[in-house]
Image (cartoon, rainbow, N blue to C red; front, side, top):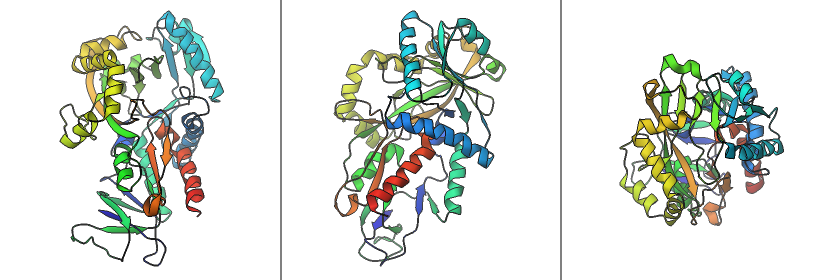
Length: 392
């Protein structure tokens, strides 16, 4: 489908449009772990730190207003080795700098009081971390958008953007539709780099898809986990590591791992797209990332194949978990932005371009976790930026 950028209102009155899959939250928002993050991990002063803390408060407020159920079940970031304790304390200081509420360090006895089956030397207790079903939240956003006068087009693939020359309801080949508007905001997740390129803006940073596979506790074993249990992040490795996440339906997800997906929407092990695969493996930034983290990457691939290797990671925190207590669960695909030097783009990225089209587009280029938590704060920031950039 085409998006025609009209230079003014002389062609057609422009209305707010939203283009989606067959339904809202079809991809990342519908495949994430459902955690309402508190803002501990992120570099002080970064957009992630600022927007996550604001977004979490707004998310709870929004859910209360809309009657969307959630649980403020808390989170423990648990040190199980002595060498993790300094990193845990540094994380505590970072959380304080980010204005995360009511953080505290607790010892082994307090860990056991909060999570009777969890073992650890020290933990960072974040009581305002919660869980919610983000599909419900996203669907509520969609209803708000429509009630405000917006129109949502489902199953509408954007294949081109060009300056409009004449008003038409169909493209020249008659196979699709043309939508006319004055300005565009893209929030394309796994395809954010491709939409940017279509608009004539930079394809960098590039998106490389990483699949995260979860395990789930068998229903009769879910009593072992009350709240979120996370590892202390290791700065040598690019991803967070295995954690325990209770869900709103009463289930408990375990994981995820992080392995290269061979398709941008490849939620299953054998999903494959030749174009997506070649796009990833011919990108020099990916190879630089792989070579710097070769042992970690091989370990992730091994754990993806062998259930016992994943369970071994979980037993560091809850020794009672056995291979007989878990089942293979759902998967998600992370739209990981990479630069040409192989660095993970850590913060949110919003940009546009120049020229007739690029100057009328604002791209949400990188919005990984905690983007769902931060969504309302991100929306406000985007709205402010749209007003400023487009002089509306």
